[in-house]
Figure 1 (tube, rainbow, N blue to C red):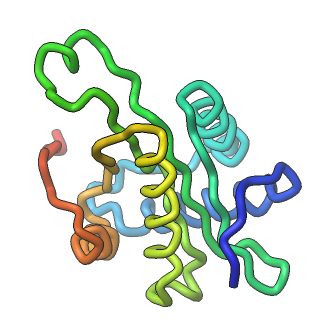
Figure 2 (figure 1 turned 180 degrees about the horizontal axis):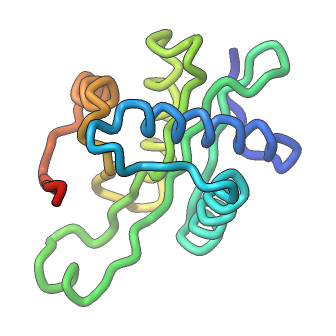
Length: 160
């Protein structure tokens, strides 16, 4: 297994992984509010790629036997006026996607990809990294906790 930088020849494999993640999130959604639109595959890929291009982003892929089995996408957060007024931190990175093929989760590949994107973000001056995790995704919450991440904010929801 090797970690490589993004190349557009892997676009379809990236889309497959993004769809796999959304299918999982829809499955674990106890509110039954999440969905996957027919245009999800192309739409989310385009949004992620635009974010990477616009915000000093980077994509790393885990490749094994010529197959993409994981990915991480990191970007630099846009800093707005509220950030300037309320945060000491000048530059924050975000992991906007981390997906490991379901057959090999728990094998350490997620940690390797996370460390790789953290190293990149630090190299460009980020002093912290954040990630938004869907609350019902307890596996992801446990993973990030094991990798040194702390819950700093809660976003709570109530179904009406």
